[in-house]
Image (cartoon, rainbow over all chains, first blue to last red; front, side, top):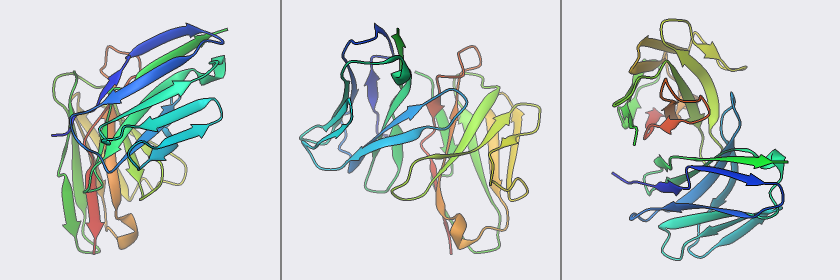
Length: 110
Length: 117
């Protein structure tokens, strides 16, 4: 069974601060997806990283896939209240099965 | 941490047959469970919210008569794809928030890959 550990589980910060969310595993994934979910809605895919060492940017969000494709990070610069939500990482294996991390609940205070 | 299991992991069936997928919370009770579907290279799509002891709530565009959901206990929800067709082939995944937690936090099952021939 593949496991994906996501940290921190909860994060409360002030507007303007930077933060990083981590997803770590001992397993190799063919790709890794990051989602953001708001209450009452399904997760929304933010990005998929495929290549080891890959870095993708989405406005103030920077996603990185580890060189060995076992870990990933999400860095948010100058967080805003609109960034508040549940962030999920999910690793996809060769069989196209997804393993989700436990999620990081982010609250950005104005 | 909390664990959610799904069974089966893989299923291949002929067109026209029905397939039942189980979602179980193994070490916590879940009054609510969510069912999602994901097509290749696309995001998860919320299909329905399963509520223990009452009818499921379906998202717009999801046929409730085709995707039957039963949440008969606090640890089990089932999704039955009736008269499955090749276009129903997808990755189905459930999630559940522990009953005593905020609904914002969910634990995801490992998913079920359905292939309809």
